[in-house]
Length: 564
Image: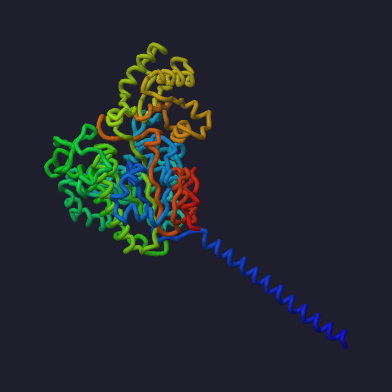
């Protein structure tokens, strides 16, 4: 009897224990399944709209320098609600508009995407070419030639192209800027539309027959509304000029003047000098150009019904006027400060419309710049900091004289542009010279010029793999089929430009350090001081959307930015 009772108890214990083990196994399987589902759903984030913003010629320190003057709904909203990369740099030169916009959107450098400058010498055609120019297409919205544009010289896809491919061409891509290259290159090859501004006596946003044969109704309505007319007014400071303590004096010798002006100081009476400055073209060189861009971007948001369905759309916006103002007045001017305070308001206005039209938390924004800028060298010199101006015309003349003495010919140089020397290889061959030897001879001779810091030859770019420093930056900007024979790096603070206003283009930190801000759907709150590079933006957006990166990508996703 005892044995039967013990056996029954053992059976009950075994069944109970087995059920418990099985339950634990089922629980573990369920838990594992839940994790798998969670992992699958976290592979991508699906904002209704991605907004890419490029601020032309924005130095990183414009964020910190003007921080106390900004409102809470523009730059500060992006920083406080999103992610800031504080040590973000261009990893190539020349640092200029065409290559900058292209690199942000392709996730690579001129070495791969081929846009080596705004303009460059085409070695095959023997002429200078424009980065977005294309005579195969016609202007749409103007009778002039300003619309003869396309992305034909860009060799790789963009993140906007990849969105179009990923969504079976259902996701819309619209690009907007004052400058044509600021719209054409970010829009990519497959954009639904790219629009840019023609000033003078027209004041219209136009496009190219590459995209369409006639402007949509919402664009013609915008143009006919005389939206630009309201900016034909005096440019005064947004705030009391005495509060602009983050800038230099208002009247100084470091700033340029608009035609017809006798002073560099505020106010700038635009109506009084309108005709002297090509009519509506003067708006480009004031913060009103950014405001007009914002007006048009909001019109595009509504006119194209962006972000209204489950398929992600993309709005690419470039604020070009910051570059015009920087070139005219210099990075330390009160005009630059006022331009950024007004841009801050324009950003707040754009974000408010996005909240209304798309919905808070339903869109994702990134903001960066196409390059930064150098302090005006005359200002640096007056403060005992090295800086100077050089003339490539004088350098070319001296090189030709030296070349005649060295090689018996003054015809070895075909072109000098973008800090590069293009040699005539037919003449080199006719003289029975070795190209490598000639390149090295020119590079060594250039080093004897007091303004030149470093030189590199095409042969060096071909044969070496640089991973740090100036040669790394130079090599990333060197394209084997398009770049020159000798690359020149000037001393820090030395530029080839007018003696007023700021410029850019070098591999120096003052031209490479730009902001990178993300906020919105799928973005972590935080910041990093670790080095990030411009080609990292496109693969980060691609990873966010769970799609393939552009086909020439050399950057990598910035993991710290993404929530998943």
